[in-house]
Image 1: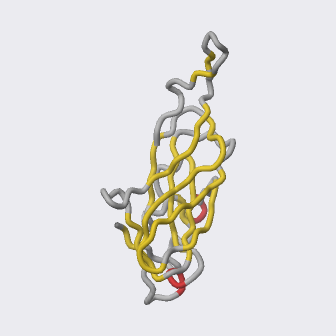
Image 2 (image 1 turned 90 degrees about the vertical axis):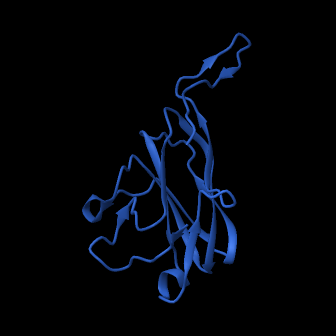
Image 3 (image 1 turned 180 degrees about the horizontal axis):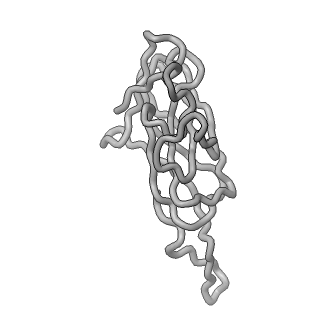
Length: 158
């Protein structure tokens, strides 16, 4: 798990792929995402919201003047106590440069504004698997003898 903190002061107040927050990155491959992506994770929190951001081509922190805007973002409600969270993010028509990074940071509410509030993202455990799922249309679609598209080898799993 990873503590979910609000980093409101310090030298780097705007960062893409800020490792102070939970981030996941992975290679996507050549293709275009079709429709929405769903980011699923478990959280233990005292309420409030989280912001789920998706970046493209970020290999590390890019802060302040080098800040890169996320390609998509959405805000979700965190559970009071333990709960599963699903964030639906519009990625329709997005073609990743190479990889994507998912970052989760505090939104408005107790975790972001009250120092006594707590939040924790649980991920990659047997009982708390985190995931991102989306449909990818390959850039180079080939067709079989029946005219059906073959989606082989171009979109790779995250």
